[in-house]
Amino acid sequence: METTAETNPMNLVMDVKVRLTVQLGSCQLPMKDVIGLAPGTVIQLNQQASDPVGLYVNDKLVAHGEVVVVDDNFGIKITALVGSEK
Image 1 (cartoon, rainbow, N blue to C red):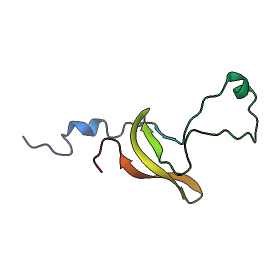
Image 2 (cartoon, rainbow, N blue to C red):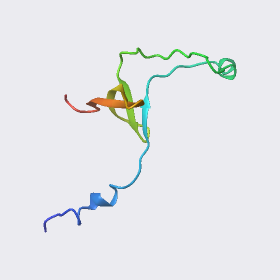
Image 3 (tube, one colour):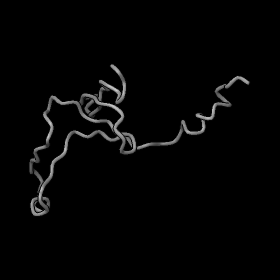
């Protein structure tokens, strides 16, 4: 039997929404510093500005990319998929 678009079981999940998250970096702070955060506070992350950012789907790393600006909004340009040879 030939699998068509209508009979493909993957079609059942194609409309399921997942959360995409881009991680620019991270850091650890003592709670006393977190409590002292205020507007204008700058927090230094453990990542260089030129390093690729991580793209996560439901908390699983799936790709790396570069931050871009599209029509005054941030976006991500995928540069590598996790586990791909390229």
